[in-house]
Length: 171
Image (cartoon, rainbow, N blue to C red; front, side):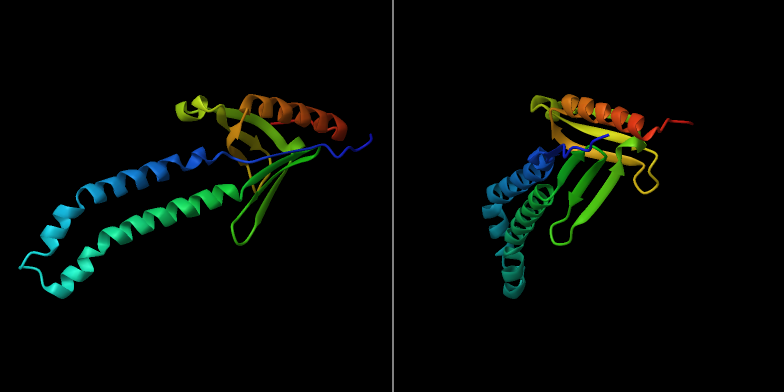
């Protein structure tokens, strides 16, 4: 059998980060709307001036922390890539250090496709592969576009790979 260099590469959607973004918007909005009342409370004569200088900067630090968490999560998702080749599926992830996970296609036993409402609105889904691999028995491709097409592609490649390697599932 002749090997071809067939390979499909795709990335998860940044929609995965919507809870962090919504939390940042909500917390920042609350802080901004109550900032004047907070400042009046902190500047009261019962609180020492040194303590009030420290307490007045807390809302800014909270907003900065939330912004940094959003940036970190966007970078984390941006640094993930999925690759499907003729013989294996690879997940590459990591911002500073890279982690590569591989699963041979003939090891895939079952599939699950999950599309929460928010993902369905944008044509996304989570494709979970159940494998006989010892290091990665469950392999999830999160927030991928056109999940039904990806499922069909992987399923066809798994069947083709099993036939080529004469591998049959035995439970």
